[in-house]
Image (cartoon, rainbow, N blue to C red; front, side, top):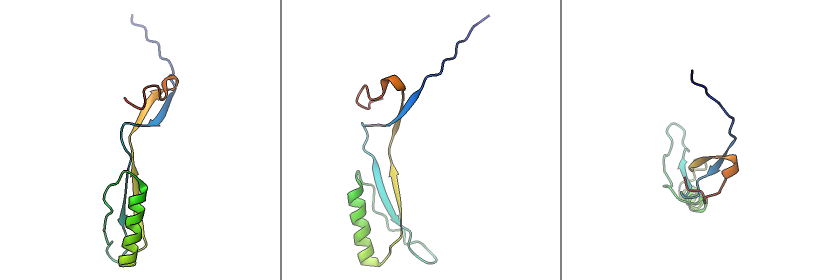
Length: 87
């Protein structure tokens, strides 16, 4: 007969420090059809916000869908951040 032991191991969720987060925005202004202009993917929010300001000045559009993406790492609670964010 085999025997199993299950233990609860608490984990923390951390942003993976080895990968830059990504920011982007898309113009969703328009009555029937969205404009669709896109900022491109950037590694910080500032270039995306500047793109939004310029696009609003040029087009008068004021509605945007913003996206943020990053990678997360699950670590046992006692090891959080112990190796600089690497997996």
